[in-house]
Length: 126
Image (cartoon, rainbow, N blue to C red; front, top):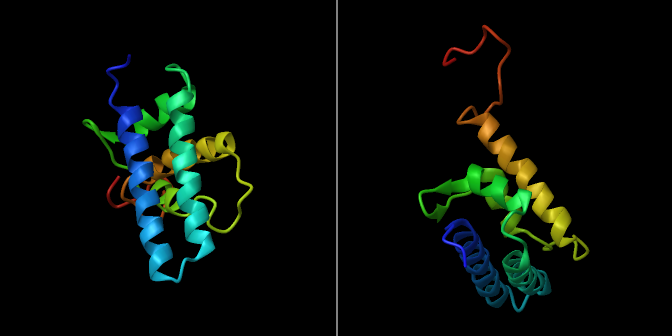
């Protein structure tokens, strides 16, 4: 049994977004895209629970997205989770986790610089 707060925080977040997608499906006349995304997020949460404790992607996501014991994704990660399999139903679980890590790295690299990094010497905040 693990005492690491990441996995339960991450899977709870995925299930919360799945619930939100189900509410959106009702709002939009049982929109199949919302239902597919909700089911896929539940599938992803179940899959994450089966991964080994030393999974490098989970360790990296934890490092980049945790605030204390809470999963706090930044913009890109949050956006992609919210639309998982919404448009395309063939996105693989492993490929999606890989993408989340890449997006979390990009989110951290921006660090509030919404226009991206500036050339050396041009950044008034750097």
